[in-house]
Figure 1 (spheres, rainbow, N blue to C red):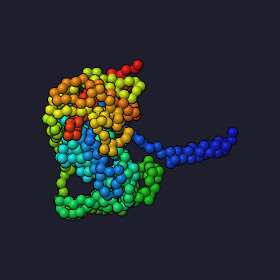
Figure 2: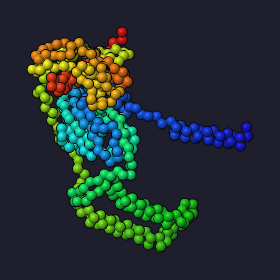
Figure 3: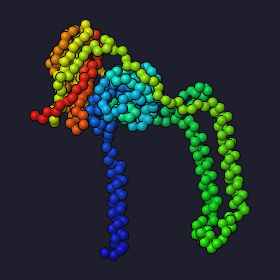
Figure 4: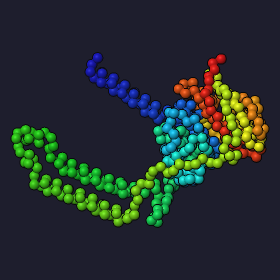
Length: 418
Ligand SMILES: [Cu+2]
Protein backbone atom coordinates (compact mmCIF):
# COMPACT_ATOMS: atom_id res chain seq x y z
CA UNK A 1 0.00 0.00 0.00
CA UNK A 2 1.35 3.42 -0.95
CA UNK A 3 1.83 5.94 1.84
CA UNK A 4 -0.79 8.33 0.37
CA UNK A 5 -3.29 5.45 0.51
CA UNK A 6 -2.48 4.96 4.18
CA UNK A 7 -2.98 8.67 4.84
CA UNK A 8 -6.27 8.71 2.93
CA UNK A 9 -7.46 5.64 4.81
CA UNK A 10 -6.53 7.22 8.13
CA UNK A 11 -8.32 10.43 7.22
CA UNK A 12 -11.43 8.49 6.21
CA UNK A 13 -11.58 6.58 9.49
CA UNK A 14 -10.83 9.66 11.52
CA UNK A 15 -13.67 11.49 9.82
CA UNK A 16 -16.09 8.62 10.37
CA UNK A 17 -15.04 8.31 13.99
CA UNK A 18 -15.51 12.00 14.64
CA UNK A 19 -18.91 11.98 12.91
CA UNK A 20 -19.99 8.98 15.00
CA UNK A 21 -18.83 10.66 18.20
CA UNK A 22 -20.68 13.90 17.40
CA UNK A 23 -23.82 11.98 16.41
CA UNK A 24 -23.74 9.89 19.56
CA UNK A 25 -23.17 12.96 21.67
CA UNK A 26 -26.02 14.97 20.21
CA UNK A 27 -28.68 12.37 19.44
CA UNK A 28 -28.31 10.03 22.40
CA UNK A 29 -29.36 11.96 25.46
CA UNK A 30 -30.39 9.46 28.12
CA UNK A 31 -32.76 10.64 30.82
CA UNK A 32 -31.43 10.10 34.29
CA UNK A 33 -34.36 8.60 36.14
CA UNK A 34 -32.69 8.10 39.48
CA UNK A 35 -30.22 10.48 40.91
CA UNK A 36 -27.80 8.50 42.94
CA UNK A 37 -29.97 7.17 45.72
CA UNK A 38 -30.65 3.77 44.16
CA UNK A 39 -26.99 2.97 43.92
CA UNK A 40 -26.43 3.67 47.60
CA UNK A 41 -26.29 0.69 49.91
CA UNK A 42 -29.85 -0.33 50.82
CA UNK A 43 -29.08 -0.81 54.51
CA UNK A 44 -27.71 2.75 54.70
CA UNK A 45 -30.85 4.21 53.18
CA UNK A 46 -33.05 2.19 55.52
CA UNK A 47 -31.12 2.96 58.70
CA UNK A 48 -30.16 6.61 58.55
CA UNK A 49 -32.73 9.30 57.83
CA UNK A 50 -36.39 8.55 57.25
CA UNK A 51 -38.21 11.29 55.38
CA UNK A 52 -41.98 11.46 55.79
CA UNK A 53 -44.97 13.78 55.43
CA UNK A 54 -43.19 15.28 52.45
CA UNK A 55 -44.96 17.92 50.44
CA UNK A 56 -43.71 19.51 47.25
CA UNK A 57 -45.80 22.67 47.00
CA UNK A 58 -46.72 22.45 43.29
CA UNK A 59 -45.98 20.57 40.09
CA UNK A 60 -45.32 23.57 37.85
CA UNK A 61 -43.72 26.88 38.71
CA UNK A 62 -42.74 29.90 36.72
CA UNK A 63 -39.29 31.49 36.72
CA UNK A 64 -38.89 33.68 39.78
CA UNK A 65 -41.81 32.10 41.62
CA UNK A 66 -41.47 30.52 45.03
CA UNK A 67 -41.63 26.81 45.63
CA UNK A 68 -41.50 24.90 48.87
CA UNK A 69 -40.50 21.46 50.02
CA UNK A 70 -41.72 20.67 53.51
CA UNK A 71 -41.91 17.58 55.64
CA UNK A 72 -40.47 15.73 58.54
CA UNK A 73 -37.61 13.38 59.06
CA UNK A 74 -36.65 10.84 61.66
CA UNK A 75 -33.07 10.05 62.59
CA UNK A 76 -32.80 6.31 63.07
CA UNK A 77 -31.62 5.18 66.52
CA UNK A 78 -29.48 2.29 65.33
CA UNK A 79 -27.37 4.56 63.14
CA UNK A 80 -24.99 2.49 60.98
CA UNK A 81 -21.32 2.49 61.89
CA UNK A 82 -20.32 3.35 58.33
CA UNK A 83 -21.76 6.83 58.72
CA UNK A 84 -20.55 9.32 61.31
CA UNK A 85 -23.17 10.44 63.81
CA UNK A 86 -25.16 13.43 62.51
CA UNK A 87 -23.36 15.94 64.71
CA UNK A 88 -22.49 18.09 61.72
CA UNK A 89 -25.35 17.85 59.25
CA UNK A 90 -26.48 20.13 56.49
CA UNK A 91 -30.02 20.26 55.16
CA UNK A 92 -29.71 20.32 51.41
CA UNK A 93 -31.76 19.92 48.27
CA UNK A 94 -30.87 17.34 45.63
CA UNK A 95 -31.18 19.04 42.26
CA UNK A 96 -29.00 19.30 39.14
CA UNK A 97 -27.26 22.58 39.95
CA UNK A 98 -29.09 25.76 40.96
CA UNK A 99 -32.21 25.21 38.86
CA UNK A 100 -33.88 26.56 41.99
CA UNK A 101 -32.10 28.83 44.41
CA UNK A 102 -32.61 28.24 48.10
CA UNK A 103 -34.00 31.37 49.70
CA UNK A 104 -34.43 29.78 53.10
CA UNK A 105 -34.23 26.47 54.93
CA UNK A 106 -35.51 25.63 58.37
CA UNK A 107 -35.34 22.69 60.77
CA UNK A 108 -37.96 22.91 63.54
CA UNK A 109 -38.47 26.53 62.41
CA UNK A 110 -34.82 27.37 63.08
CA UNK A 111 -33.13 29.04 60.12
CA UNK A 112 -30.31 26.71 59.04
CA UNK A 113 -27.97 28.26 56.47
CA UNK A 114 -25.14 26.37 58.20
CA UNK A 115 -24.60 22.89 59.55
CA UNK A 116 -26.41 21.74 62.66
CA UNK A 117 -26.26 18.83 65.08
CA UNK A 118 -29.10 16.29 65.18
CA UNK A 119 -30.01 13.77 67.84
CA UNK A 120 -30.52 10.11 67.07
CA UNK A 121 -34.01 8.71 67.41
CA UNK A 122 -35.67 12.11 67.05
CA UNK A 123 -38.27 13.56 64.74
CA UNK A 124 -37.74 16.92 63.08
CA UNK A 125 -39.77 19.10 60.80
CA UNK A 126 -38.16 20.95 57.95
CA UNK A 127 -39.00 23.50 55.31
CA UNK A 128 -36.93 24.52 52.31
CA UNK A 129 -37.96 27.64 50.43
CA UNK A 130 -36.90 27.75 46.82
CA UNK A 131 -37.18 30.09 43.87
CA UNK A 132 -37.35 28.84 40.27
CA UNK A 133 -34.32 29.77 38.16
CA UNK A 134 -33.92 27.43 35.14
CA UNK A 135 -36.55 26.28 32.67
CA UNK A 136 -36.96 22.51 32.50
CA UNK A 137 -38.25 19.39 34.14
CA UNK A 138 -36.33 18.74 37.32
CA UNK A 139 -36.28 16.02 39.95
CA UNK A 140 -36.06 17.66 43.35
CA UNK A 141 -34.97 15.66 46.39
CA UNK A 142 -34.91 16.30 50.09
CA UNK A 143 -31.37 15.61 51.18
CA UNK A 144 -29.14 15.65 54.26
CA UNK A 145 -25.38 15.83 54.08
CA UNK A 146 -23.63 14.25 57.04
CA UNK A 147 -20.02 15.13 57.71
CA UNK A 148 -18.07 11.89 57.71
CA UNK A 149 -20.91 10.07 56.03
CA UNK A 150 -21.89 11.68 52.78
CA UNK A 151 -25.16 12.56 51.14
CA UNK A 152 -28.34 10.90 52.39
CA UNK A 153 -30.81 11.37 49.57
CA UNK A 154 -34.48 11.45 50.30
CA UNK A 155 -37.41 10.95 47.94
CA UNK A 156 -37.42 13.08 44.80
CA UNK A 157 -40.30 14.47 42.77
CA UNK A 158 -40.52 15.96 39.29
CA UNK A 159 -41.30 19.62 38.98
CA UNK A 160 -41.57 21.71 35.83
CA UNK A 161 -40.24 25.25 35.58
CA UNK A 162 -41.62 27.42 32.81
CA UNK A 163 -41.15 31.01 31.71
CA UNK A 164 -38.30 33.26 30.69
CA UNK A 165 -34.95 32.79 32.43
CA UNK A 166 -33.90 36.34 31.53
CA UNK A 167 -36.51 37.59 34.01
CA UNK A 168 -34.90 35.83 36.95
CA UNK A 169 -33.75 38.14 39.69
CA UNK A 170 -32.32 37.33 43.10
CA UNK A 171 -32.70 40.63 44.86
CA UNK A 172 -31.55 41.30 48.40
CA UNK A 173 -31.14 44.40 50.51
CA UNK A 174 -27.91 44.64 52.46
CA UNK A 175 -27.62 46.03 55.99
CA UNK A 176 -26.11 49.14 54.45
CA UNK A 177 -29.30 49.68 52.49
CA UNK A 178 -28.18 48.66 49.04
CA UNK A 179 -30.47 46.57 46.88
CA UNK A 180 -28.52 44.06 44.85
CA UNK A 181 -29.36 41.36 42.34
CA UNK A 182 -27.14 38.48 43.47
CA UNK A 183 -27.29 37.00 39.97
CA UNK A 184 -24.72 39.53 38.76
CA UNK A 185 -23.55 41.43 41.82
CA UNK A 186 -19.86 42.26 41.54
CA UNK A 187 -19.50 40.48 38.19
CA UNK A 188 -18.35 43.58 36.29
CA UNK A 189 -15.69 44.29 38.93
CA UNK A 190 -14.42 40.71 38.91
CA UNK A 191 -14.26 40.62 35.12
CA UNK A 192 -12.75 44.12 34.99
CA UNK A 193 -9.92 43.47 37.48
CA UNK A 194 -9.11 40.01 36.14
CA UNK A 195 -9.12 41.34 32.59
CA UNK A 196 -6.91 44.30 33.53
CA UNK A 197 -4.21 42.22 35.25
CA UNK A 198 -4.32 39.56 32.57
CA UNK A 199 -3.77 42.26 29.96
CA UNK A 200 -0.80 43.68 31.90
CA UNK A 201 0.73 40.20 32.04
CA UNK A 202 0.24 39.64 28.31
CA UNK A 203 1.69 43.07 27.48
CA UNK A 204 4.80 42.36 29.58
CA UNK A 205 5.37 39.05 27.80
CA UNK A 206 4.72 40.75 24.46
CA UNK A 207 7.26 43.48 25.31
CA UNK A 208 10.01 40.84 25.42
CA UNK A 209 8.62 38.48 22.82
CA UNK A 210 8.90 41.14 20.08
CA UNK A 211 12.62 40.36 19.98
CA UNK A 212 13.99 36.85 19.33
CA UNK A 213 13.38 34.87 22.49
CA UNK A 214 15.23 31.60 22.65
CA UNK A 215 17.89 30.63 20.13
CA UNK A 216 19.53 34.03 19.66
CA UNK A 217 19.69 34.73 23.38
CA UNK A 218 20.84 31.22 24.13
CA UNK A 219 23.63 31.42 21.57
CA UNK A 220 24.77 34.81 22.88
CA UNK A 221 25.06 33.35 26.37
CA UNK A 222 26.93 30.34 24.98
CA UNK A 223 29.35 32.67 23.21
CA UNK A 224 30.19 34.32 26.52
CA UNK A 225 28.30 37.58 26.02
CA UNK A 226 27.74 39.00 29.52
CA UNK A 227 24.14 38.65 30.75
CA UNK A 228 23.58 42.36 31.22
CA UNK A 229 24.19 42.99 27.51
CA UNK A 230 21.02 41.02 26.75
CA UNK A 231 18.84 43.85 27.97
CA UNK A 232 18.98 47.56 27.30
CA UNK A 233 18.54 50.65 29.43
CA UNK A 234 14.99 50.96 28.05
CA UNK A 235 14.26 47.44 29.32
CA UNK A 236 15.37 48.42 32.79
CA UNK A 237 13.18 51.53 32.68
CA UNK A 238 10.22 49.47 31.44
CA UNK A 239 10.68 46.94 34.25
CA UNK A 240 10.86 49.67 36.88
CA UNK A 241 7.80 51.39 35.43
CA UNK A 242 5.88 48.13 35.55
CA UNK A 243 6.92 47.43 39.13
CA UNK A 244 5.99 50.89 40.36
CA UNK A 245 2.83 50.96 38.24
CA UNK A 246 1.71 47.61 39.65
CA UNK A 247 2.16 48.76 43.23
CA UNK A 248 0.35 52.03 42.53
CA UNK A 249 -2.61 50.27 40.90
CA UNK A 250 -2.82 47.80 43.79
CA UNK A 251 -2.90 50.66 46.27
CA UNK A 252 -5.44 52.55 44.18
CA UNK A 253 -7.62 49.44 43.81
CA UNK A 254 -7.46 48.77 47.53
CA UNK A 255 -8.36 52.38 48.37
CA UNK A 256 -11.16 52.61 45.81
CA UNK A 257 -12.76 49.34 46.96
CA UNK A 258 -12.35 50.29 50.60
CA UNK A 259 -14.14 53.61 50.08
CA UNK A 260 -16.91 52.08 47.96
CA UNK A 261 -17.54 49.31 50.52
CA UNK A 262 -16.46 50.76 53.89
CA UNK A 263 -18.39 48.15 55.88
CA UNK A 264 -17.54 44.51 55.19
CA UNK A 265 -17.68 41.43 57.38
CA UNK A 266 -15.87 38.09 57.23
CA UNK A 267 -17.62 34.94 56.07
CA UNK A 268 -20.15 33.81 58.67
CA UNK A 269 -19.47 30.18 59.45
CA UNK A 270 -19.38 27.56 62.14
CA UNK A 271 -21.68 24.88 63.44
CA UNK A 272 -24.99 26.53 64.21
CA UNK A 273 -26.29 24.52 67.17
CA UNK A 274 -27.69 21.19 68.25
CA UNK A 275 -31.37 21.05 67.45
CA UNK A 276 -33.71 19.25 69.82
CA UNK A 277 -36.25 16.87 68.29
CA UNK A 278 -39.96 17.69 68.16
CA UNK A 279 -42.14 16.71 71.07
CA UNK A 280 -44.29 13.78 69.89
CA UNK A 281 -48.08 14.17 70.33
CA UNK A 282 -48.39 11.32 72.86
CA UNK A 283 -45.12 11.86 74.68
CA UNK A 284 -42.15 9.58 74.47
CA UNK A 285 -42.71 5.99 73.28
CA UNK A 286 -46.53 5.96 73.27
CA UNK A 287 -46.37 2.74 71.28
CA UNK A 288 -43.56 0.22 71.43
CA UNK A 289 -42.88 -2.04 68.50
CA UNK A 290 -40.35 -4.84 68.70
CA UNK A 291 -39.65 -6.98 65.68
CA UNK A 292 -39.31 -10.67 66.42
CA UNK A 293 -38.52 -11.96 62.92
CA UNK A 294 -38.06 -10.23 59.60
CA UNK A 295 -37.26 -11.44 56.13
CA UNK A 296 -37.55 -10.97 52.39
CA UNK A 297 -37.68 -13.26 49.39
CA UNK A 298 -34.79 -13.34 46.90
CA UNK A 299 -35.68 -12.59 44.18
CA UNK A 300 -38.89 -10.89 45.20
CA UNK A 301 -40.78 -7.74 45.95
CA UNK A 302 -41.87 -8.42 49.49
CA UNK A 303 -40.57 -7.60 52.91
CA UNK A 304 -42.33 -9.18 55.89
CA UNK A 305 -41.89 -9.11 59.60
CA UNK A 306 -43.56 -10.06 62.87
CA UNK A 307 -43.74 -7.24 65.33
CA UNK A 308 -44.81 -7.17 68.95
CA UNK A 309 -46.79 -4.01 69.50
CA UNK A 310 -47.86 -2.51 72.80
CA UNK A 311 -50.21 0.44 72.82
CA UNK A 312 -49.48 2.57 75.89
CA UNK A 313 -52.01 5.26 74.98
CA UNK A 314 -55.69 5.41 75.83
CA UNK A 315 -56.77 5.43 72.17
CA UNK A 316 -57.22 2.75 69.55
CA UNK A 317 -54.29 2.89 67.17
CA UNK A 318 -54.49 1.58 63.61
CA UNK A 319 -51.49 0.47 61.57
CA UNK A 320 -51.61 2.62 58.44
CA UNK A 321 -48.21 2.58 56.81
CA UNK A 322 -44.76 1.11 56.71
CA UNK A 323 -41.99 3.27 55.28
CA UNK A 324 -38.42 2.32 54.54
CA UNK A 325 -35.81 3.83 52.22
CA UNK A 326 -38.37 6.37 51.02
CA UNK A 327 -40.80 3.65 49.86
CA UNK A 328 -44.25 3.90 51.42
CA UNK A 329 -46.40 0.78 51.81
CA UNK A 330 -49.92 1.93 52.69
CA UNK A 331 -52.79 0.14 54.31
CA UNK A 332 -55.61 1.67 52.18
CA UNK A 333 -58.19 1.13 54.97
CA UNK A 334 -56.33 3.61 57.14
CA UNK A 335 -54.20 5.94 55.00
CA UNK A 336 -54.91 7.24 51.53
CA UNK A 337 -52.15 9.46 50.19
CA UNK A 338 -53.30 12.96 49.33
CA UNK A 339 -49.89 14.61 49.09
CA UNK A 340 -49.07 13.60 45.52
CA UNK A 341 -46.21 11.44 46.76
CA UNK A 342 -43.95 10.25 43.89
CA UNK A 343 -45.70 7.30 42.25
CA UNK A 344 -42.58 5.19 41.90
CA UNK A 345 -42.13 5.26 45.68
CA UNK A 346 -45.76 4.78 46.65
CA UNK A 347 -47.51 1.47 47.16
CA UNK A 348 -51.09 2.66 47.83
CA UNK A 349 -52.25 -0.86 48.67
CA UNK A 350 -48.90 -2.37 49.47
CA UNK A 351 -49.37 -3.12 53.15
CA UNK A 352 -51.09 -6.15 54.62
CA UNK A 353 -51.39 -6.58 58.36
CA UNK A 354 -52.74 -9.57 60.30
CA UNK A 355 -54.34 -7.16 62.76
CA UNK A 356 -55.02 -3.53 61.97
CA UNK A 357 -56.25 -1.99 65.21
CA UNK A 358 -54.48 -2.15 68.54
CA UNK A 359 -56.65 -1.42 71.59
CA UNK A 360 -55.43 0.77 74.47
CA UNK A 361 -53.07 -1.20 76.72
CA UNK A 362 -53.10 -4.19 74.38
CA UNK A 363 -49.98 -6.13 73.40
CA UNK A 364 -50.23 -8.07 70.16
CA UNK A 365 -47.96 -9.76 67.68
CA UNK A 366 -48.81 -8.53 64.19
CA UNK A 367 -47.57 -9.92 60.92
CA UNK A 368 -46.77 -7.09 58.51
CA UNK A 369 -46.22 -7.69 54.80
CA UNK A 370 -45.12 -4.94 52.43
CA UNK A 371 -45.23 -5.73 48.74
CA UNK A 372 -44.45 -3.52 45.80
CA UNK A 373 -42.28 -3.29 42.69
CA UNK A 374 -40.56 -0.36 44.38
CA UNK A 375 -38.84 -2.77 46.78
CA UNK A 376 -36.99 -4.08 43.73
CA UNK A 377 -36.89 -0.94 41.53
CA UNK A 378 -35.46 1.18 44.33
CA UNK A 379 -32.99 -1.67 44.89
CA UNK A 380 -33.89 -2.15 48.52
CA UNK A 381 -33.87 -5.86 47.65
CA UNK A 382 -30.15 -5.33 46.99
CA UNK A 383 -29.70 -5.50 50.75
CA UNK A 384 -28.56 -9.03 49.82
CA UNK A 385 -25.28 -7.42 48.67
CA UNK A 386 -24.85 -5.32 51.80
CA UNK A 387 -22.35 -6.14 54.52
CA UNK A 388 -24.96 -5.53 57.20
CA UNK A 389 -28.25 -7.27 56.53
CA UNK A 390 -30.35 -5.16 58.82
CA UNK A 391 -33.19 -2.84 58.05
CA UNK A 392 -35.04 0.00 59.66
CA UNK A 393 -38.26 1.76 58.96
CA UNK A 394 -41.18 3.63 60.35
CA UNK A 395 -44.52 2.07 61.22
CA UNK A 396 -47.22 4.70 61.18
CA UNK A 397 -50.09 4.39 63.58
CA UNK A 398 -53.18 6.52 63.14
CA UNK A 399 -55.26 7.61 66.11
CA UNK A 400 -59.04 8.19 65.96
CA UNK A 401 -58.43 11.89 65.25
CA UNK A 402 -56.36 11.01 62.20
CA UNK A 403 -53.00 12.00 63.67
CA UNK A 404 -50.11 9.91 62.44
CA UNK A 405 -47.61 8.60 64.98
CA UNK A 406 -44.38 7.25 63.53
CA UNK A 407 -42.80 4.39 65.44
CA UNK A 408 -39.34 3.22 64.59
CA UNK A 409 -38.80 -0.47 63.85
CA UNK A 410 -35.62 -2.25 62.92
CA UNK A 411 -33.97 -5.64 63.12
CA UNK A 412 -31.83 -8.09 61.19
CA UNK A 413 -33.38 -8.99 57.85
CA UNK A 414 -33.00 -12.60 56.77
CA UNK A 415 -33.31 -13.51 53.09
CA UNK A 416 -35.18 -16.64 52.05
CA UNK A 417 -34.51 -18.43 48.80
CA UNK A 418 -37.42 -20.85 48.71
CU1 LIG B 1 -33.82 12.44 41.34
